[in-house]
Image (cartoon, rainbow, N blue to C red):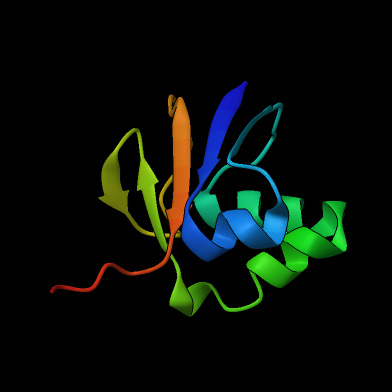
Length: 82
């Protein structure tokens, strides 16, 4: 099982702040592909992954990163300074 956390407009498009899923995905990109195949709302949220960042167990990561041993995946838009 893996926890997935969604922030900002990603959460708004999917309609959930977090969920726990069973996945066979080997990488973050595989997970995104799996989620997009579930429902249109996921496809809408992940339509432009270049506009997203991902963190694995609260460490900023890349979409080609392996998921082996990961407990939490978080998706969020890039942060802006202020």
